[in-house]
Image 1: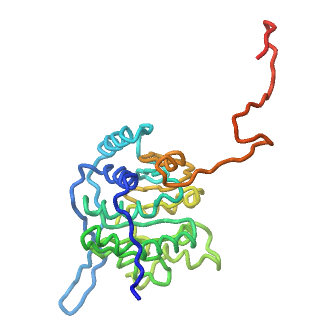
Image 2 (image 1 turned 90 degrees about the vertical axis):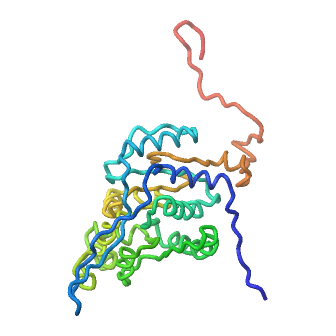
Image 3 (image 1 turned 60 degrees about the horizontal axis):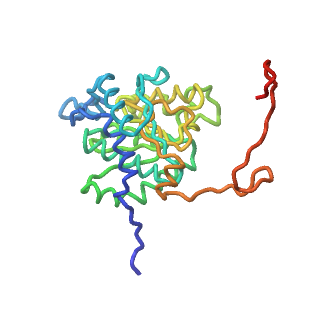
Length: 313
């Protein structure tokens, strides 16, 4: 019996528009990669320097803002006045997509486009909890072959952060290829709170480790200057401790994907419920009855006020 394979439509315009609305933010950035020293060790041949690979942004905040305004005008969105948020010391960009329109697919494709065009390689996807984390990982499992075909054999590595497998963090930093870490906010936010027996594993990312030359795992991550993608940000960085944790990743930028943003920061693309319905991407929700009235138009009188001239409003 032939193996059943899922096929994905790579030519949906609304998804390409969402991807390009982030990729074009960095228009003018040269295709390059930055190296940094991870450690120096000694062997029989002498000293050996191990290198890590980081994202390198050459554009100035003014360059980015010009690009952002151009994209916002294109998408008929309110213009941003500035990009750097004091809570993060990094620019934030928001993509609003209605549930069921493929935001996980969109940000996966955005990752690959950012690498193809600019050479960015380090990405961290932060999610609210374990259920969404597993869902994102499964999405990568299902779409990997599709994306390898779409991007002509371009390979990428993705993994779920686990405090018992900290060598994966080192590999994340030292790999030349595309590295994608999937992590739930509790896995590293707890390091900013008082350590207890229930969160001691979560605090490991902030503690020095003998297997990592005495360095903290978070330091390896910070040096890569990762692009941080937040899935459902309204449930991720909704506390000061969460914001501190995100900032500690030293993000090059933060990209937020949700249907219901609490704070849109710099909104780059919007596919709301009305647009999604008009494009036949979701089904219409109908309200059959309101306060005992049918589904036709109705008016309700709230109050009557008498004005000084004797008339009523």
